[in-house]
Length: 174
Image (tube, rainbow, N blue to C red):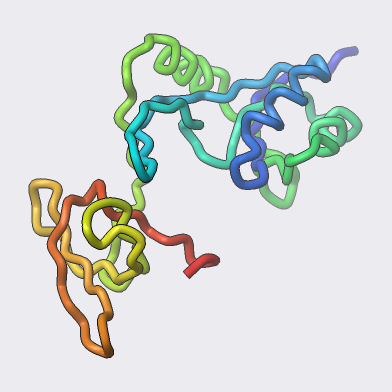
């Protein structure tokens, strides 16, 4: 008797989502990597690129069979299937179907990480005359403006700038 298949969230190494997706689909395992488009800033230009909707994750269709899940986890860049002490937690098919519909429309998805900056968060300035400087988030001003505290010569200076020009530095890199 064949076990029923369920969707599971697979955690990947940082920036390995596409590599893991390609390898898993080569293994004839059903996988889904929802993507969205976003503006990418480079030193000399801006472009629109496709990025994973959920950075660090993709979805795989598997059964609860340990051997099948081991095949998934032996993929280069795969870290673990999300779950609890009893094992991986299935994701309802309806949620994956909704994601597939949303990402297939071709319209730009406005995404939010639900992680707003908090006072004291380490940030880096991405654009403008202070590009590359590290600082500390101070406050939201509204209308897409923020204040960042930047340490200069032993003093703090508060600089107001566009929120798009600031990115939170992950705690591992700060």
